[in-house]
Length: 334
Image (cartoon, rainbow, N blue to C red):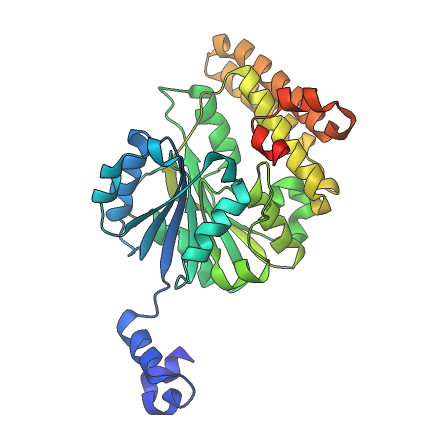
């Protein structure tokens, strides 16, 4: 169809409005991208993120910040770029899915909805361009980029990021469930993008999610015979320095999200992927002579497993215990 525009504009303008034909011809048929970022008590990382988004090779239409607690938002952040817009909400209004869907509702003209977190830093100016290349394939409805950690600051995270975000890109479909298990619909809103039409067709993000809204959406797309793309060359710096107890809380919420939303989450293996990573990481630490890191890694992994097991069985636990185990008490009180 696009080729026919170049060959015979008059003929196609009978089918398409004339202004759209002109827009397509002049723009090179580029997709309009809005970047949506939930914000909570931002630090210097958000400043750097906005500066690097401004430098991207692929033009960004708008950057929409959904900020929790207006009193903690530095007003000078909006001066970094005139395409940055801020919308404030109260802490009790925040929800991982609903807040992001609110941002999507503001991006009315976007063809691609791109999501990031306020602590992710683009590696280079080609991040957006490389991420949305995934949509050249018509079956792809969601894409996510590669997260990297600094080996000098957190070596364990550096290696586990390589395990979860390998150097090779790939497209995942329902046919991969038998081999990839739960990783088939692994997707991260730290750096992700969704085809707007398909995002809307899926009903947007769930409006009550404790966590994991990205994988919930990806699982629905996979079940609908769509595809999720991993774009290894869309790179961001992003890692956490969680303590063992924080790992427990995080994995508790992760498992709760899987139980609450069911579907494919309860039909495919999950723990086996974790076992593979643990074995690979311990072998790697031995090989690199970093034996002193193994005790910490084993302890952190144990806390993760305990949190996950408790989360999978949270309906059997008393309410007071659930509130002690979760990272997100607002979810239970809403």
